[in-house]
Length: 148
Image (cartoon, rainbow, N blue to C red):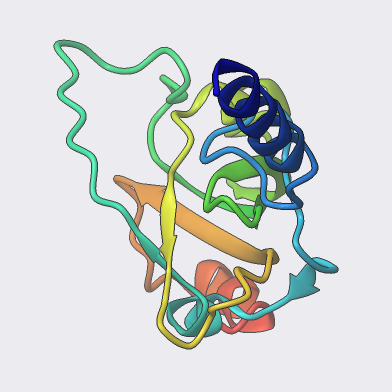
């Protein structure tokens, strides 16, 4: 009887190791399918941001000190709903944000929507602004290029 139980446990362990599903959180990005490129306003069809509260006691080190600006960056969400890559597209004024500072920003996590049962990984252009009028002509033109 003891041998049968050990054999069953060993078989279940081997079956579990053969599973194609990744662990909930892995250190490496996981892609259930090809990454698709979407527009910022299409994100809600695939992923919902999981709200996190960040309280800073002082200005974050990744945030540029020199005045305000707008940052456009490409971000990738893997099939686990983790933001796994960021790439600086443009900052206004030029040079206000750097690739290094962008990579220091906290990463976001997302939950797949009902319509994204396959957990399709996506890449899209996102943005944020700090103390800069988003209605300036230059900012509006650039954001319109990315449908933001």
